[in-house]
Amino acid sequence: MRGTSAPIGSVDRVLRDGSTVRIRPATPEDRVRVERYLIELSPESRRLRFHSPVVDVGEIAAQAVDVDPSTHVTLLALTGGDEGTVVGGAQYFRIDDVRAEIGVSVSDRVQRRGLGSLLIGQLAQSARDNGITTFLAEVLPENHPMIAVFRASGFSPRIRALPGSIEVTIPTTLAVRRLPTLADAGSPASRATARGRKAMLRLSLSAALVSLLPWAAYAAGPPILCPS
Image (tube, rainbow, N blue to C red):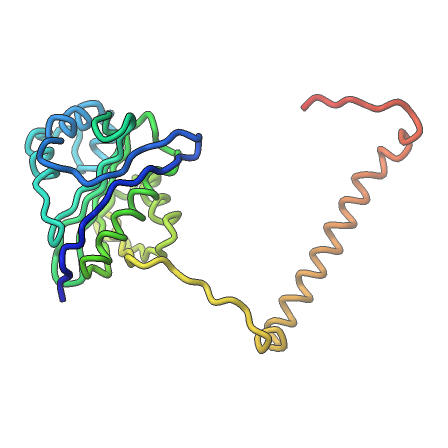
């Protein structure tokens, strides 16, 4: 059953390098801004995102900003505030009552800083608010960075190989790992795991002691400086 088109707000997020981006919904006024972003993507980034290095940026930008929260949402990541420069985007198109197709891209100059995972998280929140429980994505087999982003998102994706592509199924709710209980502590599997950990700890301590032995002879002498 479809949701009630919950409003989407703007948020500021910090990337791994300490820089900040504004993530907000796209509006029709963003069309030129999105076109500029698509043009500035490298040919390889465009190919991995759209499965072709040659795309109609005007048509894609127009589609991206033609939003309806109940069926289609586009989130933009910008530097410099609401009117700044687009450095990433994520969108979903509703397929049915509970599923939507998702697409994500990040500017070449801010890749590998965690922006893709942040966009997925914000988009999932919007999807949940509108009754969507599952994202679907089709990724080129060689698009390892995007597959890694899905894996690192915290949403426990399921990945399946198809002819010429990879299908990724992503729940819009974060995976919750069950914490161990007292009953678990007494189980045979738990005791075996604990014995294994103790054995590994003994080996680690022995290795550390052996590595320290050559330095013991210098304990009473001047300090030895090693290059870092």
